[in-house]
Image 1 (cartoon, rainbow, N blue to C red):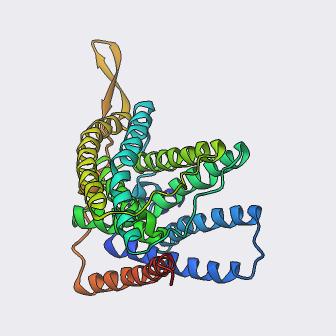
Image 2: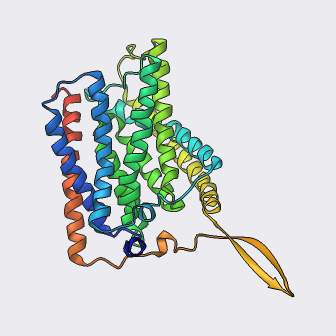
Image 3: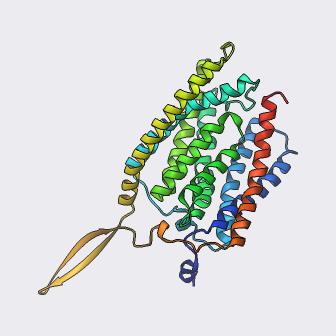
Length: 347
């Protein structure tokens, strides 16, 4: 009976599943925000609440899996494996992303500061080694798994068999908007799109989880070194000129383009490694003239690739329901993004 239930589970999401998961997350996040507004805050409590908030991504993903009768491992590609080379490639992409996108991010912030904006969401406190280790768990490990499960595991894969670039851009845009930090808008959007592209090409969510982890790990390590050394970088820089903004934005675009080209190139190697490590080994016994010989052969996963498990073309009502549901997510988190933007401008 249990095996029959597994066989009956669907191996792919359809277009509405991703939107439904986002709606569930909005509801959970809203209820959670109301609940914690009555809780006195402290460092330890904030850490626990941060982890709980991240777990809401998992809860939203699993709720759709259960309600829509999906196979969580195959539909999200959690059943895939990775090796040491993939880990190194993921580290390289994370480093390239930070270097390639940081200048464009700086240009965007400089442009806003020209009109009076001041950042309102400060860096994580990692002023000692204990806080640094704790942050590796709460800022690096947990978000990498939880956020990737929803945005790449469910949302992106719900577009499989339909439109590659719409899925990549939608999942990346929602990923950026969810963070609600105007300072990180450019980096989070570009990173979200890059992660979507890599997840689509490799069909292996562990790759993007690794990249997400290393991205946050590098950032938190830089923050730790900065805070421990006492160099906060808060010295006065003087008036921001239009020419300085223009130069920063133009060079930032060039850096970003170069970084994207490098990442696309590396992704090809990751895809090959992922296909190699996920090959199935089978043993075949050949009988010949009263003798038997056992040979081992490698075959690619016998299941259909995710792209080939195409969903049926959704009808008009499902498309409208999907758009409306994503609209709720966008409005909810756009409000929070705009709220922090207004605060940054002194509103």
